[in-house]
Image (cartoon, rainbow, N blue to C red; front, side):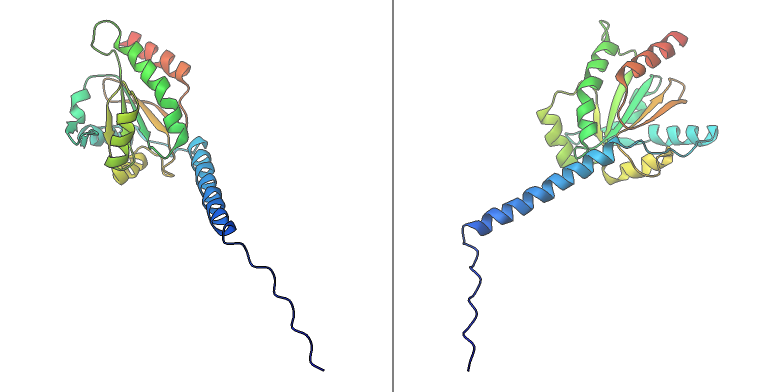
Length: 202
């Protein structure tokens, strides 16, 4: 005797397929965001810098000319003679974006009432010009933001950040000496006191 045919499993309703597809997209987006958060908040080990290596890296940085979000070239020699806080960041790095309002507030403090900043914060975006321009148009940033693109990763390595972790911040005194390298989110209170100490020291 022939066996009766097995019943076919019920097909997935057509309306459920788009929901499953969107669910997959949502899970992928959440995973990417979580990865960005994890990547940004890690404290990456920094390679030690010999005094001459650090000085060479600062000279190479100051010799560059990088575009602003409008595409205008800005020579970094513009900031010669100033106490500098150089913050490497990216629009896809949540901790980078989260610390920017605090950095903007600190720059307002540094500007004081004279109009001449006692110290200068400088943002260097390791990102595309289009994304940085879009971000700068949406957010009020009180300090210059320049575009390094993928070349920013080479800059990070010059300063001992071999892993390319972001955010990454340098404190450079007016003589071009590296005072501090900060891997991960900046402690604004500590940075403020550090800058005050350097200002008093001249």
